[in-house]
Image (tube, rainbow, N blue to C red; front, side):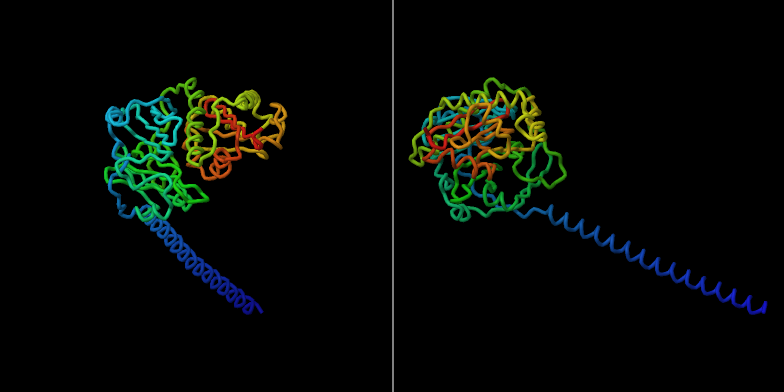
Length: 381
């Protein structure tokens, strides 16, 4: 009896030992396979990242039109186009020279305050320079015949390399084209008609400052906003400049121009006043916090908001004695340049079309330190 018990114990021990060794063996195989899978996934990620960071050879087109002035001293530009009719400061260390005001050939030239050279030229009207094939009004198909549109660009700036990746939205609404002299142009396209509504010629520094394309390289983007900003001047000139752009487009469309100082402007100024005094009364908390940051001088924000009826409390209409039936109200921030209307597709669709439409007869625009308020009288009465 004792012998049987001993044999049974030995047998059970051997069985348990065998099962334990089998489990350990299977576990080792699974662990090894898991490690191989992880290594394979890691390798695939690296391969994908390397593939993503590989920029095709960009075929730059012949330098033409206003691209030939990028990088030149401002006096060389003035030799041909004369002195500007007005000047405007900015929040990005660029001084703007405004030309052809109150016409259909609006032109704005940016002077980099560090280099004192031309860094940007914005063409909104029908002006064409040096037999350029690029022009406002051309179709998307004509643009494609002029240049291949690339989704990836690698640029060098201050001994650093940056790689842009253009989304499908970028390619369809504001693609990027390079010139042989190292400058670029952004053709801004109207979403519905797919025609060019504005052209911006610019250097690499200005391209980085605009920050409208995704950067997929790991190089930190240079600081966009430095130095002090003359807000007293900007609070006057930003609405004035925007009205010039609006009226340029209205002239091209044969619509009546809008007065700069419509009484609705006072209503827009009241909206700015009540928003800055108590933003949380009218906006959701995250929007109110962003507004407070911007109006306190934080001009480096990347977040952008365009708020319309439904995005803020109806109390805002009530507190400034406006009704939702006759008036459209837009609260936009941060806003520093009229070209923002061309850069932001939704802003262009939701607001810009109304600003230049023939049925719009009255608008009010007010601005304060990055906050833009627009009121549109739907009926025009």
